[in-house]
Image (cartoon, rainbow, N blue to C red; front, side, top):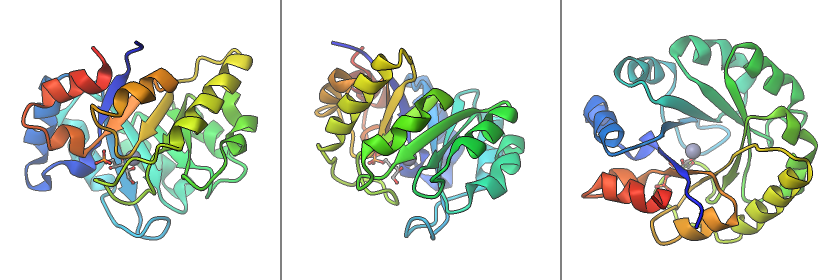
Length: 217
Ligand code: DX5
Ligand code: ZN
């Protein structure tokens, strides 16, 4: 059974104690930290932005995997870079021709990711695979943590893995939304290499056990 990296989603943390929460998941074996930036326009929720990323950068060495659920990501690339983000993932729904922004992210020395909402066909990603460092498949409608996993997302993961293999690309597939120790094995079996989990980690009484279960290690 394949293993996966685990990226706890900070959205599920106690925002009154962010430094402690980050230390808790870091000690528990988190591989990356997933930061859900929401603008209240692309998604019907507002989460956090640059100041929080600056603060998080000061208290962890974990890779800051930044998921931009915002309508105009190109406006903020430099600011996210300066705040300390390591990777920026943009939605195809707001960047229908993503090649320029993916190149811009890389020119800033950051890793670039491309993601699609549940309603967007996975084939929409296919022309751009060779230009990304990560592909994120949303398994919930973006905007909120704690939602129910959408099993149809695994069909997208399998189709994507097949296409990446055909193109001899080792690009990791990340999944995000409603992932827990019960559905994580199916995700890993389908080809997911990085699991984002918010509630399943920050809500766990034993985050280390949760991370091990999600990772399959
Ligand atoms: C949803 C976010 C997800 C979410 C995951 O818009 O992109 O990262 O926070 O949270 P859980 O794991 O609780 O579904
Ligand atoms: Zn996310």
